[in-house]
Image (cartoon, rainbow, N blue to C red; front, top):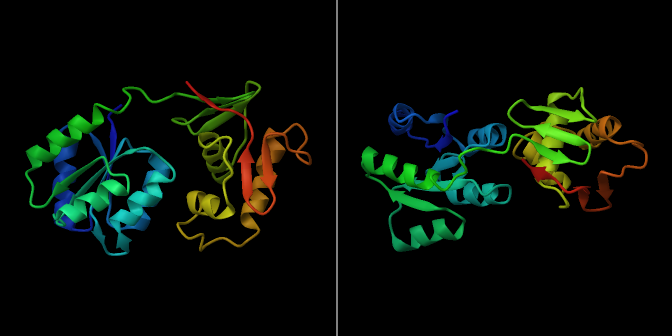
Length: 230
């Protein structure tokens, strides 16, 4: 399986050119033109590398990098016309791994991408195991006690997000942003609670007294079991 790259660049021509070049080099490329599109693709496909412009139509690439860093240590490369030392330092301070300024050569970009991706594991974990529950990320399915769990897409996404962030209190806002929309605009306040309850009914021995997925009053929820990536 080729390594996936998420390209966030609002210039149509440049986006197409860079995407085409990277695909010819054997990479899988997901293109986005706005922060909103990019965040949804990032959470859906878990790319190995993000290439990101800074000046975007719906925000700032620095903010996007900061948001991503709260969820993942994915490799991050800025590709931007902002070329002062202060601009570069700002990029690194937000968590970027590297920085390329425009104009640039495609050959230099491909070389930089290749060097960065050598730091990425050759094989991603095939499973995430937590007690009697096993998650299969590539297949988007979960198993409990050897039996497939009948999960909706939302329930699976919730389960995956919790198992990727175990022993950590996750706020309602973090969960709404991760599973639904960047700002949670399209869900009412009860949607998360309903989905949490339904997920508990499928994973807990006694859903009314949860032992795995617990509520921390006033703060959010926590997956109170260690998870092992294999």
